[in-house]
Figure 1 (cartoon, rainbow, N blue to C red):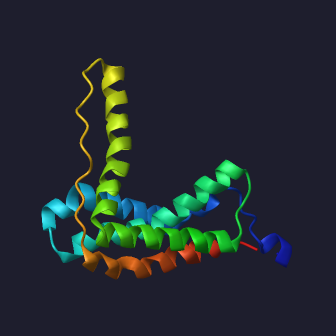
Figure 2 (figure 1 turned 180 degrees about the vertical axis):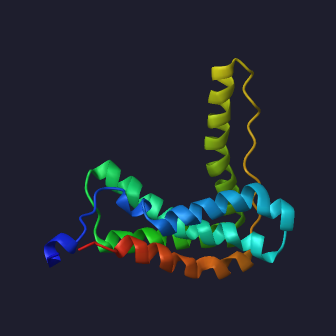
Figure 3 (figure 1 turned 180 degrees about the horizontal axis):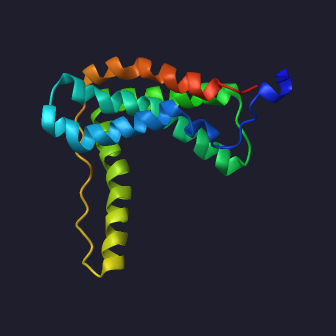
Amino acid sequence: MTAETATRTLGPGDCLARALPLTAMAVVILNNQWWKYAYNNFWTGKLSDIGGLVFFPLLLVAALEVARGRVLSRRAVILCALATALAFTAVQLWAPATAAYGHGVGGPLWAARAIGCWITGLAAPAYHPVSSVADPSDLLALPALAGAVWVGLRDRT
């Protein structure tokens, strides 16, 4: 195999189709649906933060790539990780950002439920923002962004 054939060419959004971000999202789902209720301890409180910090910057990169129809630069990957770090920090430390997060996640969840009710002929559910509590100790999860940056920078020129 030559060096040319060994080099992988990325397409828009390909950074999400890697083991690390897919595993991170699976951990978030498992943690939020089962583990928090079964174990409810310090670690279950941090697992979703770690998984989200690995997954979200890459989701942001993928969304921008698909919207633009091209693979973004290494610099853009780092900027997406920094934007994620700033937003995450604000949600953990600033009450208005915490409330905005609850509505930012609650709105799309309500819309999905409302569409499901519409399809099945049921009445639309009442809107409720997602419950979110500012927790400065969640900032301990910020190093997980390194995983997102590592995956995002692979195979990029």
